[in-house]
Length: 236
Image (cartoon, rainbow, N blue to C red; front, side, top):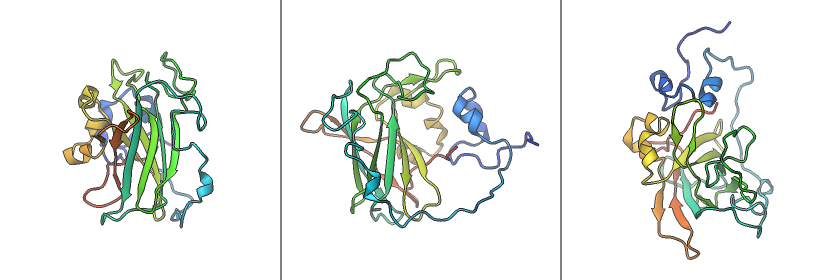
C-alpha cells in the first residue's frame, strides 16, 4: 500500500522542498514515486561499446526530416562540445541523444497539447556517437520558450534535452542545456532548483562566434564525474 512518507530518492537537484515549488508540473507529479521502489532485476554495466549501426544519415540534424531536405523555420544553430571523465580525459563512443521544441516552443510529440504550431520540416530529435577525442556536434534551430500547463504563467526558457549512455554507466544520464542571456533562465524553477551556482552554470551553454553559414554556435561540454560534474537529472 502506498504511503505518504517522504520521497526516498529525490533528484540530485530537487529536494522535497524544491519539488513543492513545481506543483502543477504534470511530468514530475505523476512520475515521482511516493514510496520506495523494489529492485527486482539487478543492474549490470553498459558496454563495451555502441555500434555505428545505431546511427543513420542525418541523425545529427534536428532541423530536417532527411539529409538535404527542407529546413525547419527558425534561427539555425550548431551545438558542439566534448564529453569528459572525472580526470578530464575524453570519452569516446558515448551515445548522445537530444530532443527539443521548435522555434515556437512546440514538441513533435502527441503529449504536447499546446496551441503552438508544428513545423512540417522539424524533426526535433537527434543522435550521435562521440569521436575519439570525445567531441560531438548537432545542427538544429534555436528552440522557443513554452508555457507549462497547470502552473499559472510559468514559461520554460529555451532549452535542449540531453541523454547520454557510455560504457561503465549503470543507467543513462539526463540533463538539459540552457542558453546564455535568456531572461526566463532567472525565474525557471527547474534550473534554479540547482542551489550550487557553479553546478547551475554547468547547464548553460557558451555562445561562440557564428559559423560561416550564419548559424549560431553554442558549446556545451559534459563532464561525467568529479568536482566539475555536469548537473544531471534523475530519470523518471
